[in-house]
Image (cartoon, rainbow, N blue to C red; front, side):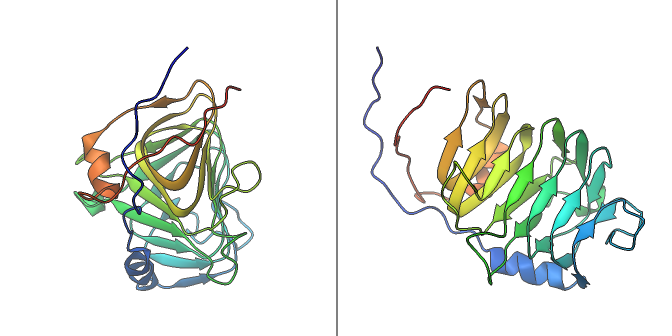
Length: 218
């Protein structure tokens, strides 16, 4: 048998200024339609460079298996972000010590769109100065069983996921260090570690607490 100690009182989650980063992404221009990295049919917003940044995408961002994408600046994806298996996402050296914000948000359809989905065997690598990628989903879907705002199944120990109004579903055998959501659903054999360098990106002093709703074995 086991028991939990009493958690801190509930508090509002720290705010994340996604609007600022969406505006910064807009400074780099707009891509109309889905962006399919590596495709030769005119739908690749990276134009075959496998490098992307400072852009609004009015559609989905699809990263197929094995393309190994480098992110150079903020992105606003007005749709879903789908990262297929066997991928590496690099943080550009150009950003220096600054992390890169990638926002998935569709104000016209916030319950269905604006999701972030990563498949198995996806790596997120920081640059030489320790900067990484922070994914922000403004999707409002908090039903983890059907359409969570963020659905991740990977070794994501060097990336931060944020879903202030939605659920983050952590798949089996995942390793996470930075996560912030309205609801967090963690499946079996996953590891949660504390990394102070990532914690500073998503938590401000006296900004919130935690509460165990339920634990379910799979």
